[in-house]
Length: 383
Image (cartoon, rainbow, N blue to C red):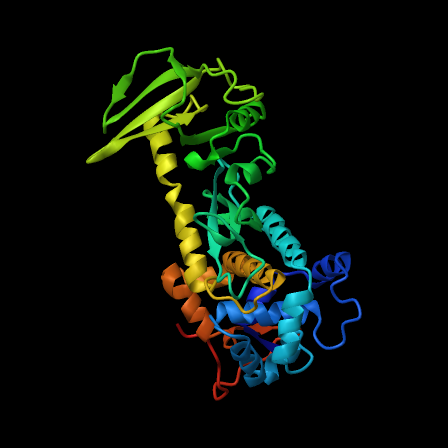
């Protein structure tokens, strides 16, 4: 028997259907569902993300056009637009959040995941919404809608933790709820300044690299040591034992290292870290790599169409964000596609895959080996 393995089939092969069903049962996602179950909903939205569809109608037409592939995708029949819209509005978005974490755990257990010198970047990105169409959205001076908080693994170039909150949730408030892992270096910007959070990171055997606020009260323990490339450093301690109100600074009088990076035409960049083993240049380079999470946000928003949503309800928007991040992880896990596409840039990869989802990736043989007929047409995925 011979089977042609399609690209979309290879991407979805990273999901264990039994595990997916157990997650759905946890949230009773398919309870009393007759027309469109959670798997069909997921595949439909996933196809929309990969093909960069801008509406539910485009997704429905795409599935209908490839009706001969519906059985292999696990779709029982053509999907109605109204049914898909209702599913996005009512099915619990936590199903796809848990699916994301399952895929991350699977990726971490693979041979391709590097565990040496893990560096994780913490940041958030605003999801701005129209308040007329989304009256439920929270607003602040800068953000109108939602926030997506992400912990991005710089070593393996993949998000390992995320959450979706209202616009009023402070970045450091969410960061303090995350689990700190021993040996990991956390890189964050000035918005994550909290002395007690730094103390928790240090107490659990982890490291941090962030910016030091100008009004921080410090006491210098060593003289400023200058090295090449305009980078200097010194050891200091925080002297403010009570930063405000009844709060107590647990990191007071504990040595830290301050790294000062000179910038042409701009004020110096002042970094703070509890990592004394890395050199000053390495600390400066780590903070420079924080820009990688901004590039990740930009890539996801532009290529997976996070700027335009397929629904107006909060649940539908959260569902689409989750499936967009799942799409990124599935692309990361598809090792055969990466092997074929190693000469293709990430900017063009999604466009190529989106235009070739139902094309055959390669020919696979099962059971008894047969002689190939030279006159038989062979299909390949041609980039």
